[in-house]
Length: 332
Image (cartoon, rainbow, N blue to C red; front, side):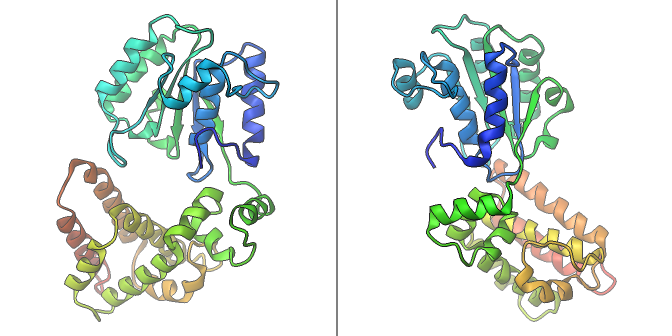
């Protein structure tokens, strides 16, 4: 999807910001929050482009033809800055936020707003978040901060409280099916993809491309083999090393979410992998909830530590051994 792409489920949040701008009530900071896979990044850019545009249309969108729009598209507009991690999965560090803060006190060079997009906002480390707080507390006129986050709970309460939250929600199933059919030309065989993606349309496309259902089935089988001591743990570590860590991590989190629901006795709960519910039920037997939550915490820690270039093999060995420990009869 290209930057500034619009989606049918964006109609209501776009109406809200357009009305606020028309009424002169646009806040100094907006937090775009909601599950991943809903196009919040595209919405942020659509809004940013519209605010630096010299000639908005009736819908509030950028005209796409003026000099400001051309500059925005190539990333050279003086009043638009997008702050992201230097590499996917890395942190946003204080230097990036300091540069933003220094620019925020300058006068707007063109006729619109000065706009800063921070994405994902929850990737800011503590020092960066503290540096941003000062800008939020002392906003400059005609300056808008757009924070994008699929995990707003990871942001400090002091930051969340100074932003107007714009919530994005999973659209209705009929709307998702219609949009996906138009994108893929296939209105069938979507149930498994919708389940594993949580129903978020853009995640469905990613799940289709990366075969999340197949990855999930494979992972459940591997966890069962480990639990039943039918495979050499070294073999599993070697297999996991072949997969991109973010893909493996996401797949593990989905499996753990399913296991927590089933171990809690929620046998009819909506799960990510309904096609292997029976295997997941067997996998959950004999494992207490505390151990499952603890395993998930360890997984999240590894995700955070991966930005520090830690030894991936050692981390995977730890996760395999930890799984063996919590699936040992009476073990934790």
